[in-house]
Length: 590
Image 1 (cartoon, rainbow, N blue to C red):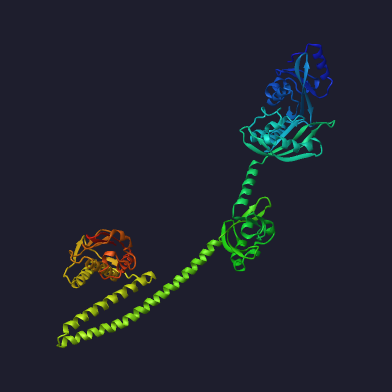
Image 2: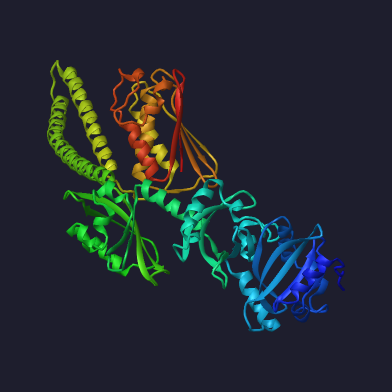
């Protein structure tokens, strides 16, 4: 099994190792087992350890490789169900480098295979890195967590100085932090330092280290743990950025409403520092009139709730805040807490108050306007009725009287009655607009024969034309009745036909076309008159608007406003097409 040492020097070395009670073996640079003392052969017989140990144990081979390069190797491992501390030193014998490997048992207890597997499982599944270095700072032991965190394999890490894995900017800092421990001024050191992973990413590591001291009191290295706190560090950094830069106030309360945490942004809005509020009750700062609604916090569930209230600032003034709150379970304190996020809505509240005041003023003005319209309409109607009655009496007298001025009197009476009718129409239209604006106009639908209504309107309008023109009615499709307010329909047709006659003097007579379709009734009122100027067509449904080409023709500018509103009240649509000096067509669909 062994390649025997044949020289005298080799023999001396082989003889020396036999005098020791602990296991010692000699290995050459080709990782061949040269010799071993009796303790080694007893503990690791050929069929128990042998060449398999040298060829298959990667950690051992890596340690030998580093030792032959000059590193001092010392680490703890499990072999043959037992725990050993392994030390490797290099001896030069007859110009050949040989590794003297010593195995120091760490415990008299012998583990069975199941216990050994449990020990190895625990070590390999700990999330923190378990490490050991020699006195020069070279890694001599690392568990599987090292590979999981830094991506380096154990084979490419063991035997290398730990500082090769540090962030370059932290090497000097780490040396200063370790100095009190190395000088044995402290029994341990604990600090945070940056490491670099194999992929080049920065890892924030919390280091805990103690000294490894042998029986003679000599320092043989360090041992401890490395905990990856990169995610925690990033969360802390983000939380710090948010707390310092976000204007929203983030707070944590206990279930009684006392402050446990307050973000720095509180000072911008309330002038309080976070420290001034900690331990105090939130309710002490809420406006007395708003505390009742905020008491809902006591019964808050795990869903997010929202509340608006006034918060007393340090200077005694109140500011409007909107707060979202939610109950959550704090795993650290093992109890329920309330987290809140608040923002200022002071400007919004001021705008709302201003809008409410404006709305109230507008409401009062509308009421005043309504009262004024009702009053003036009543006051107008009474004398107009008297004038009309007197005019009719005078007209009756002229019929039985016989004098020369009879025709002139009749002419003036006609003018009086015409003007009375015009003023009455204006008053009626103004009242109708008022009802529409105040949403007091109601719809009374019933089955209506549209053709019959159109014939009635056309007949009445034809009788009033001084030029004796007569509007035409065209009906297409199979007739049926529709549900509509009959008075509204008459007003719509009467107004559109009046305009068609009024604005087409000297032109062909207007046309009303009614088209019955399966699911829709269409009405067209067409004239061939002066039309509406293109640049003014967008104003046609504005109250009191009149196009510039009709200034010499009587009108109020209210008719089309009323028509559009009545069409929409009866769930219809209205549109128009008009070309100046060619005519206008209004289209209504029900």
